Length: 368
Image (cartoon, rainbow, N blue to C red; front, side):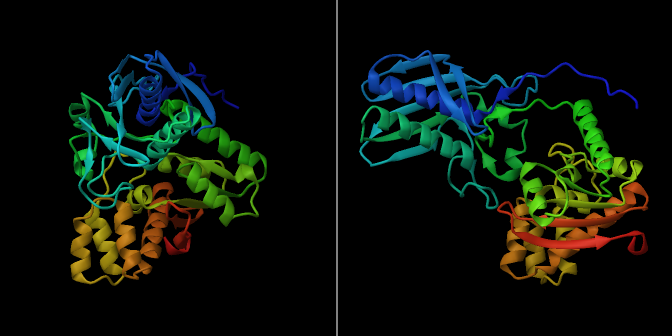
C-alpha cells in the first residue's frame, strides 16, 4: 500500500465568536471589579477551555471595554488579525442586551440565521456571549441589566473579502463560529483522510458507504442508516467529486449522499467542489427545478431573487411543493453518476438544519 505523505500538524485558531466572548468576559469583569483584565478564560463549544490575551482593557464609571486580536492559526481567513472589541455598560433594562457596533454587519435580507435588522452575530456566538456574561454577573451577585456592543474597527474593509454583501449583510463582518476554534484546512491532508476512511470501510467489508458534508449531516445519516457500521460513514467535506471517485475506485457498490440545501444545491447542478468560495449557488437553476416541481411563475421569480439556498427550501416547504426536494435529490444522483461514469448505485437524502428529511432519490446505471 502506497504511503500517504505526512504533513506538519497545523495550528488551530479561534473564531470571531470566541474572541468576542473572551473580550466580553474581560470587559464585564473589569466593569464590576474596577480592575483592568489582561486575559480571560472561556469555555468553548468544543468542550474545552481557552485563555485569551487582552490587547487592551479600559474602565469608566459606566463602561468596561476590552479587545482581542483574532488569531486564525495556520488557516488565515479574511478576519485573521482583526481587533475585536467588546464594550459592556450598565443598562436600565433588565437582562442582557447584545448588539453590533462599528465593523459588525447588519442583516438586511431574509434566509439567514439572524433576523433582518439585527447585528450579524450568529446564534452560537450569541449564546456563548450571553451565557458567559450571565455567569460573570451571577458569580459577582449582580442583578443589574447590561448592554454588550461588539465592534471590529476594520470590519467593513474585511467584509469586502467575504460573501457578506451578496448575502445582504452590510456594514461589516459577521461574528461566527459553531465550535469556537478554527480548524486549519489542508487540502492534501483532508483528501488523504477521505482515502483512508474509505479504505477502512472496505477493509470492514462495507459495500454501502454513506458520504456526508460534515458532522451534523453525518449525525442525521447515522439515524437514517442505523444498520450500517460506523466505518461506513465518511465525512467528505467539500470534496464531493473526489470522494465519489475514490468510492468507485475502491470497489464500493452503493453510495448514499446525505447533506443540506446549501451544498447539495450545487451538487445538483454538477458542481463537485462545494466550498463557498469555489462556486456560488445558482438561483436560476433552483428556479428551474422549482418550475419542474409545479411551482407557479410568481414563486419561480421569487426564487431567482432569493438570498440563500436554505431560503429557497423554506419557500418551497411553505408553499407545499415537496416534490422540489425529490427533484433536487434526483439531480444530485445524476451529477454523481456523471462524475464517476456510472458503475455504482447512488442515492441522495436532503435534510434541514434541524434534521428533518426533505426528500430522497435513488439512481443507478439503468436510470443514468
